[in-house]
Length: 139
Image (cartoon, rainbow, N blue to C red; front, side, top):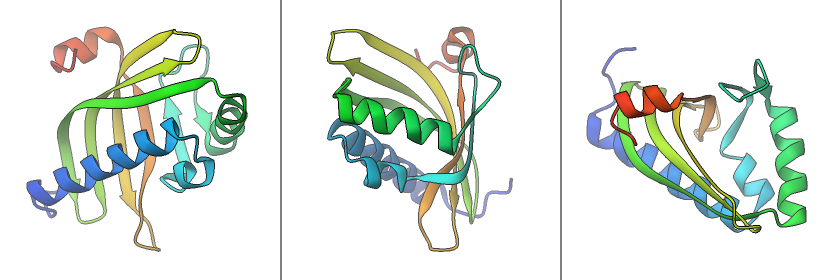
């Protein structure tokens, strides 16, 4: 990827996406949350799965939202990896608090892509190993 989009713009776009993602997940706004995710998304690094598709992710999330499983989602840190006019790759830490009190945090590498309708959506997410997240100074 080339450096076409300036660093400030890329950071602003990525941070807004993270804020919107956390808010819509925490408020269980399924439609708004999944409007932030490309229908072509591929999620890797999830234990027990080679990859997770949009359909699988949406089905699971819709049920979790309905069941009230999530109490809150937040993101900490943002490290831009690469950008061009239509893509931003960055790393962050996602923290999920469940209503039963369980807390999970993990590093993520996210690729946002500006789709034809002008909306930035996650096209790729990779759950980082703890070792990689530590190496990248995310945790």
